[in-house]
Structures are given as structure tokens and as C-alpha cells.
Length: 316
Image: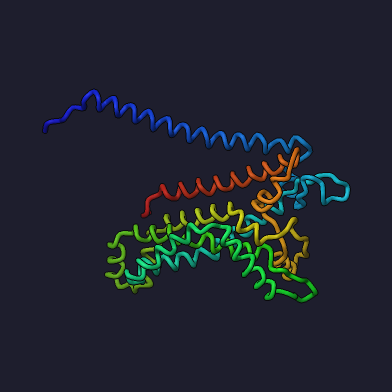
């Protein structure tokens, strides 16, 4: 077989293209590293200006400018904000995951093709819906509805519909299309021979889906969940519209107190950054940079987990 030799011009063109692609990759890496360094330098200043790691992560009173405290001293307790972000993210994922998996199974295993051709583009279109629209709908529809349902509670506690409950439901709507779309792709990647082998062994369609298809697509499904968590933890505007608080409410550790906590104005990390960062200055501004670093690290962990899961084989 005759091997065609590469001409000098083609070789030079390939080398130029390789150099350009390398420079682009190095530029992107430099930008990402610079973002981490810039935010990190600004974030760690707060710990040299009177703040401590213990106070920042364990205290729940957030008042960087000292406007709410009696003595006017600032307080950098971000524990309540971190708890808020973690709680609404995990609750939203717990609710959205089975719904997304069920929708994906319906599209790939049960639904006729004409229905898939109609409905799947709608789901993909809904993935790009602006978060402000979802947040506005939550503010004018969901918050008043929850207020009517849970107001008043026994013991005289009044709820307004704002809080973690509304934020959780808004996040479910935000991440449901993301998890569903990735789950559909993961299930479609399972070869048809897996389904045929399961049915040939006497499995029903339900047994085939639960014992053959889902285990074979477990890596892709797990990646979908992690990416949904990454989207939820960083969601800002939609959540800010329905939280409506300045501090985490102080409630008794009872069932009634927890219900009050979920349906009263509350906080999370992204809300205070979006609303309060523009007016902050001096040491207070450094405190918000620290919150941004915490959020960036959490998102980076989620993305790293998703990349690890995506690198694994579909089959064990």
C-alpha cells in the first residue's frame, strides 16, 4: 500500500493550527485560574480583618456592615446562608430526580415516536427559559398560594409563603428539564441488545427497565443528577425573588418550628450576593467575596464529580 507523504505546506499548516489551538487552551486555563486567584485573594481578606473560620461557617447571623446589631459591630456568620443553599438544593434534587427519571423512561421506553418528536423539543426549549420568568411566576403565583395554604398555623405562627419551600419548588422547575434531557440521552445510549437480552430471559417491560436499562445507564443518570445540583446551587435570580428574607429565622427545634422555617422569609448564599453586594464597601465587600468563593468551590466540586462519572464506562 502506497503511503502518501505530507507536503511541506500541509505540515506547516498543521503546526500553525496546533499552536493556535494550544494558545486557545492555555488562554482558557489562564482565565479560569485567574478567576480562582482573584476571588481567593479578595475572599481571604476577611479572615485578617477580625473574622475567623469558626465564626464564618458556624455563626448564623449575617450582618457585614453592622446595621442590624445593637452595638454596630459587623458579623460575618454565613452558616445560615450556607445551610439555606444546601437545604433547598438537596430538596429540589430529591423531588426532581424521580420525576426526571420517570419522564426519561417514558420517552425512551414507552412513548410512541410521534409523541417524542412533539414533546422533547418542548422540554429542551424549556431548559433555556430565563430564570427571571420562572422566579416571577413563583412570586406572583406560588408564594401567595403557599401563604394561603399554611397561614395561619397552630400556635399563632403566620406564614407568608416566602422561604425555603417556595425556593425549593422553583428550583425543581429550573432543574427538571436539565436532568430530564441528560437522562434521556443516557438511556438512549444503552444498546438495544441489553433490552432484547432482558426480555429474552423472561423479564417484563418494567423489569427490563429497572433491572437492565437503568443499571446500564447508571453512570449517565448520576451525571445528570450532579449537573442538576450544580445548576441548583448557583441559581440566583429566581430563588432571590421567592426567598424574601434578610436573616435565617430563629425558630424552636420542633415540627412546627421547622414548618415555620420553610414558609417564612429566608436566605441563601446567592440571594444576599445578588441583593446586597452592590451596596457593600470596605470590609463588608470582602465578606461577599468569601461567599462567592464558597459557592465557586461547591460548584467546582459538583463539576469535578460529574466529569469523573462521565469518564467511567457505561458498564461495570
